[in-house]
Length: 192
Image 1 (cartoon, rainbow, N blue to C red):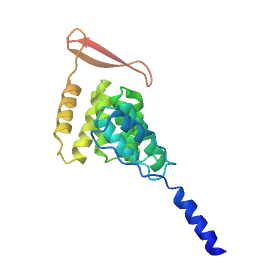
Image 2: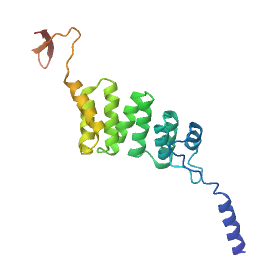
Image 3: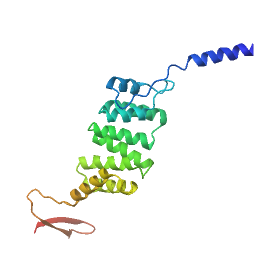
Image 4: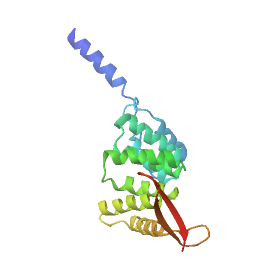
């Protein structure tokens, strides 16, 4: 009786495994990427969402990549890799506020993660926040040991932009601090 029960259990388990899903290659078309991205965590031997997402990003399919990264987050949890990838996809889709949130969350998990620093720098630069962008590019440069030419270029540009002080009429101004009572100050600007 025990032998029959074991055979029945083995047949049930074997019948539930389903076919193995091949990982789409970098040259896969949008339909193949979309199919792989939509397979949920309940599908046995499902393709890793990060792999599918990275390949979709390389193919310019950012919505598909974002779905795959969200699937990876559901399976693996919100790791630094997953959060950074989600932020990168949102950046490519022009969703700067969402990308900034995702990349900041990634950096909360790992302050030394180079892609998150670089991509957060890009997001901040797109918003004109050059001072903070240069800080993140500098962190990416340091943690990458200066190996990436792209990060060096981003850092150089951010430093230049952060140092530029441009006023609408092109005039130079002097800033003065004027005391206005106890603990109150007024900041004044006068042309030079």
